[in-house]
Each structure stands twice: as C-alpha cells, then as structure tokens.
Image (cartoon, rainbow, N blue to C red):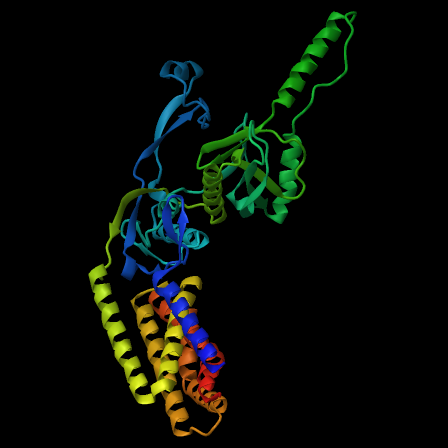
Length: 481
C-alpha cells in the first residue's frame, strides 16, 4: 500500500510537470494545437506597439445656405447645383485655435485611458506631450491590438437629429450607458441567425424626452377612410391638402450620427418608454466570422460612446513595434541557469535526507509546476519584476521544505503530521510582513509592481494550501508500514 501511494504521487507530479512545461497538444484542423493557456507578458519582456496620436490639422468642407446655416446631405451636389440653391462652401479646421489648450489635451488623454480600460487592456502606458497635444500610447501586441487602436481615434460624437430641420434632438450628454446585446434575428436563407444590438441607455431625466421623440417620429399608417367620387371641388381640394399633410407627417424621420457620419435614418414603430434604444449592428448571421466582426464593431462603438465625447480630433500618425531589451537568447540563458541552480539544490536534499529527500524533491517539483499553471490561468501579467517574484517563491518554498525535512530527520519518533503543522505555522507567521506588502502591491495600478505583487500573492497562497495538504500527507507515507 505504501509503494502504491508513492508511485501514484510520483506519476501525478510527472504528469503535472509535463503539462506545465510542455503543454497538452490536440489535433485541430490539420495541426497540433497546445490547449494549455500561455503566459501573459508585460511590455518589458514581450515588446510593445507604440502609437502616436497627433492632432488632426486638416479641414472639413462645410456647406451653408443663404442664412449661414449648415446644410446636411449636400456633399453630392455639383458646384452649379450649389450655386442655384444659393449654397456656399467653407473650409473649417477640425481643431480650431480656441480648442487647442491644455485642458482639452488632458481631457482627451483621460478619455483614451478610459477606453483602454473598458477594452480590458491590462498593460498600457499613455503619455501626453503638453507642448503640442500629441498622445503616445504603448501597449502589448496581440491579435486584438489593431482593433484597440481603431477605437482610440474616433471623437465619439453622438447625435439624434431631425432629418428635415437638422435640429439636434439628443446627444452624448443624454447617454447613461451603452452595452452590446445578442438576440435571435432573421436573415434570408439563414437559419438560427443571431443579431448584434447596440443598446443605448439614456439618463433618467432624458427618458421622457426619448419617449416624446419616439412618439412624434413614429411611423404613421395610411387612413382607411375613403371618399366618394361625388365630392365637390372644394372638398377635393381639402382632401388633397389633408393627404399632403398626412404624407409629410408620415415621412417625418430622425437621423442618428456618430462623428457626423450617418448611421441610419428611420422612424419609430412604437413609443420607447424604458429609456433604451437598440440599434442593430450588421445583418443577422450564423456565420462565426461574421458574428465576431459584428460583435467587435458593436463593442468598439459601445466603448467609444460610453467613454464620452473627445473635445479634439486625433489622427494616427505613428504605429510601430518596439522590441524588448531582453532577447529570446538571454531569456533562455536565464532559464537554463535557474534550472541548473534548482537541480543542484534538489540533489543536495536527496544526498542529505535520502528517501525523505526524494519525497521532498517531488513535492517541490509538484508545487513549482502547479505554480506555473496558476500564474497562467489567473491572468497574471509577467514583467521582469514578476520573474523575480517567481524566483522568490521558489526560494521560499525550498527553505520551507528544507526546514521540514530537517525537523523530521531529527525527531524521527514524532508524528510527521504534527511536525509539518508546527513548521508551516512558524514559517508563515515569519512572512506575515511579506504577505501584507504583497497584497498592497497587488492593488497598485502599475505593471512592474502589480506583477510582482500578484505573482507573490498566488505563490504564497499556493504554498500554504499545497504544503499543508499535499506535502504533509506525502511525507507521512514514509512512516507508514
């Protein structure tokens, strides 16, 4: 029975170690794919994408009528047609001189940081050049980086306007929250189609305004009333005027715009009394790729609208990849050196404590392997400081195992379980100051410090649980008959 327990323990440790260091590969679409989650590296280890957002110095063409009011939907008119209607063209800068100030620079930087946070970007740096308003963004490079970058430049200006009078009915100030929602949708020739909706929730005091707009701009159906052919000319005239009025009322619509680009022109089927407005993004589809694109598009729009309207217009000036100062060859050398040191230290345990040392070594390797898996699935971002944290946990665990084996070797007649409890209790009492510091570091919003704190937090927690449950029971096998 004793041998069976030892063999089972050793095989389990070997299996966990193989998974942690080599992964689990499954045949997927004509290739072998590792199903074990990879590490998340900080920019100092993986490199970074460096984005420069520069104030747009271009102009936009504005068409105005004879009264000086801006005319919408006149971009397709020729110069002759504009002249006939009495319209004139003007060139206006995207960023006028009166908005180029430090306050707007800071506001734009804060909105970009908020967007990055809502995009779940854990590792980023945003810098502001106060002399010219340029914003530098550094973030890790992955499959979502291009989408993230595309969500940084839009202004986020939202408007609901009257399609005829161009009166602004609602804007960003009326928005409370924006989310992405899913629902069943119909698409020609498609079964089990899914629609992606942009759900805009308006503030409580503007809910009544949305209901009022959706009532005034609701779709009107034709009247079923009929007229006889015997009506007088005046009656016909009245009927014609009424029909014209009804036609005008029926065609009353609103236009939704984001950054002055028309999203849709529509009327409402029914009054909206809940303060929620849902916009369909793309066509309903069951194709995975199309759904992913629609979700990504809707998510980008939701985040841009949810984070507020930027006071300045920025354009993407630079987009380059900066390599880490630490090369792959240097990382491999560091790994080999660390593994060599650990191997020597574990051999010392085997020489000193014989069979007890072998069990201690396998316990140590098991914890190290589990630790590496926990770091991955806990989404810990590894920086250089985080690597130091891994090394420190391995050292602390070695000290704990060494103390435990020494005490058991000296007091052979005592209960190993009780010795283990005593050693663990004394060890973790001694490192209480470290534990407090680690917890504090984990909540600091700076990758080098938070990476170290999170690595140490999960390491100490795993040490406490693993050594109390696993190591104690494994070493107890030696005394069993």
